[in-house]
Image (tube, rainbow, N blue to C red; front, side):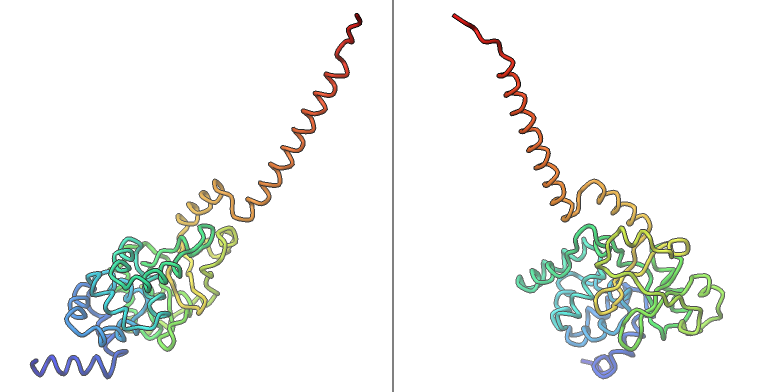
Length: 279
């Protein structure tokens, strides 16, 4: 091991938060190549200190076996939050590389009923940390494949959702301005357990192309687009929700009782009207 490598590993071990910021400045492929070359025990804390957008993209860029190796170094709650940020197809490949019991537990934790917002969220919407700069945000916007109206912010202290900065604010601000110095919409994010019908009534749809979705600990999971909301509501209209099945069963039961009563009455009526034959 040469001296440069020793210094690099020491830096990762002693300053994972600082290392995370450095790697976020690289393109995803370069950052993934680097993390693939270092021990998983050192890569894991660095990944855990990144913004949710960067963590999700890096997990996807790593080979599934390597991503699984890194995840095994983290607490289960951190693993759950991180795996939520990956695309479903890549997520399945990573889960295949994890120990069976851990993968089963993760699959259970990641499932949402189809009528809830979490089932339709997009983990690839741009997310930054409050101590990131406008230059950092512009780099992510260029790398992102999403057409968005806002950049979502999470706290660089505890990773909780902080608010949303309009893209126009990022574009009009000067270089290297901290994002927390810009105009921030601090309205509450949508819970991943919120029903689609309640989200459809949110007043922010007139300004937002995506609404922010958070988990129980206010950790940012991604965004819900108007298109996904429409698709979910359409599906919901075709398939009754769990509570609707009880109502439907009661209606069917009532119809059966009614039809049975009508049939018995009809039979009695036909018997009473039948002519009596006398010998």
